[in-house]
Every structure is written in C-alpha cells, then in structure tokens.
Image (cartoon, rainbow, N blue to C red; front, side):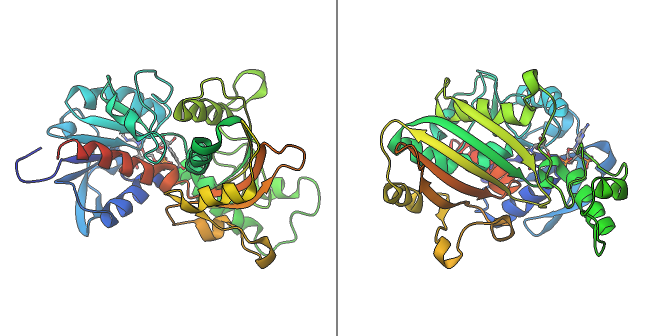
Length: 352
Ligand SMILES: NC(=O)c1ccc[n+]([C@@H]2O[C@H](COP(=O)([O-])OP(=O)(O)OC[C@H]3O[C@@H](n4cnc5c(N)ncnc54)[C@H](OP(=O)(O)O)[C@@H]3O)[C@@H](O)[C@H]2O)c1
C-alpha cells in the first residue's frame, strides 16, 4: 500500500458474470481502495471497463500483474484460481477466491461476514475462500436461526438461476427463449429438446420451458458436485462438521437469483413468531412473508438486490423442532461478488 492512499485491489476475472457485478458493487460501496487493477485472460487484454466512474484497461493475467497488489479478488474458473491464487499470495497479496479450488482446504477460511467474520484473520496460505452461490443464497438466514435455536439437520432443494453457470449460462437461456418464444412448444414429449437441438450450452438438457434436476458434475453415488458443495460448505461455515444435510439442486429458467426451499430442524421446539423476530432483525436478511396478501420473495423481485429474502416461514406440520422456509438471494451479488467485496473490506480494515 502506498502512503496516503488506500490498499491496491486487483479484480481477476473482471470481464466475467461475477466480475461484471463486482465492478458495479465496488463503484457503489464506500471507496476505500487506492488503485483498482482489472485482470482477465489474454483474450480481454486492452479492453476498457468502467469502475468508480472511470474507464480502466484490462491486463492479461501474469505474475507481474500482481506487483504492489494488497488484496486480489479471484472470479475465474477453478483451475485458473488453483494455479494463480498461490502466485498472487506469494507476491504478498491477500487473495479472496470465489472458485471451488480452496474452499474445503483446512488452511483456508470460508467466510460469510454476517456469520463467521472472525475466521478471516486465520489464513496461513494468504488465501480466503468465498462460498458457492447456492450455499450463500441461504446461509445468512440460516446462520441467524442457528445462533438462536441450534441447527440439527437441513433438507434443502434449490431452484438455481442460469447465471450460476456464468456468461455461458445466461447466453444459453436467452438463445433458447428466442427459439421457443411464440410457439406452442412444451405440449408433447421431446418437442422442446428438438427445437433447442445441441444448443444446451453448459446444461445437460434444455432449460427454457423446463426444470433440470442437475447442477455441476457427477460425484459418488449419484450426487452432483453442487449438492456436495452445499453440504460441505454449510458445515464448514456454521462450524458443524457432522450436520446431516440432504440437498437436491435443480436448474430453472431464471436469469439471476437462486431460490431454495429449506427444512431446518433445531435442537428444541421452535415457534414461527420466534423465527420471524430473528429473521426480521438479522443483518442482511429481509423477511417478506404475508401469503394472505400474496407477499413472498421471488427471483423477479430479489434480483439486483443485496439481502437474503425469506418468506413462507412455517413450523413443520409433524415436527415442532423444525421450520420450513423459502429463500431467495441474488447469486451474483450476495451469492458471489457482494460477499467477496465484504470479505475484502474486512481485510482492508486490518490496514487501518
Ligand atoms: N456465476 C455465479 O453465480 C457464481 C457464484 C459464485 C462463484 N462463482 C465462481 O466464480 C468464478 C467466475 O464465475 P463466472 O460465473 O463469473 O464465470 P464467467 O462468466 O465464465 O467468467 C470467467 C472469468 O474468468 C476469466 N478467465 C477464464 N479463463 C482465464 C484464464 N486462463 N486466465 C485469466 N482469466 C481467465 C474470464 O476472462 P475472459 O473474459 O478474458 O475470458 C472471465 O473474466 C468461477 O470459479 C465460479 O465457479 C460463480
């Protein structure tokens, strides 16, 4: 850091789906940074992107690009982070990594500022990990309920937006929607698949006019990598290494904002009024729960906003220790870029 200015920040992956939102967020939050340096692949070198109202030229990723960098935010594919995050850390930057490369490394904290901010200081590798977007879309609300009631079990289903698969996911849904718009498709078996052909992008099936019970890659016994991430990362963030977690991840034709249904069992009896009070006052959570008035969160309303939105709060019909919730969170904001920016601000505070 140079005297008289804030820390130097690098955004690696500045041109991607998460990087684009991160630049908007950095432009709107308190301006605590000195230089903000933008980095992407050599394909993007020389492009100019707006941040804090200025056009900044994108540099190609290289060792030299980290010269003088204090904090480096990585929003790139897993294998790029796995190689380059240690390079940036060795050059003295504190890395905040948004990929899956380091999340389960015991020497790398997995941080959600509203839930476990103290863990950010213990980073022997100089790397801090940002959780995956599906976990992040529910964990702020769950962390608040856990602090009061003591979580004992989680059963969740996700309804994940296509932007969770990056720019390619967004482009694929838009292309498929153009192919099916104004048609009678969706009325006979296979008609949508025939119209879409091989234009399925990063998804195994058409996502327009459809829901796809799959996200990520195949793991043992039929589980998907996304489902394993939700289980493993929730356990690590909440400090509950043996928490029973059952997850089914589903892709839906929504551009941005993940939703989840959550069945959460606690150590004793819970009341809806008690849960509502906690959720209504928890930082980063908005309670939107009046079904009689037609009020509950949906991705169409939550997109582009920062909080975790919670609605449909009910006590389980057959278990007085369990709650049912519906949760929405913008996967590119709290699910990725916003949480990264919040972690970076915690780290920057160490310089003050
Ligand atoms: N999308 C989400 O909801 C979400 C949420 C949480 C975490 N994440 C994670 O965040 C990371 C970025 O995701 P995304 O959705 O933003 O992906 P994306 O839209 O595909 O963008 C990828 C970014 O990485 C850069 N990149 C790719 N290969 C590179 C290389 N070899 N060297 C340097 N830069 C390279 C790209 O630069 P070019 O433009 O130059 O190719 C682009 O800036 C991933 O690890 C993802 O798993 C995503």
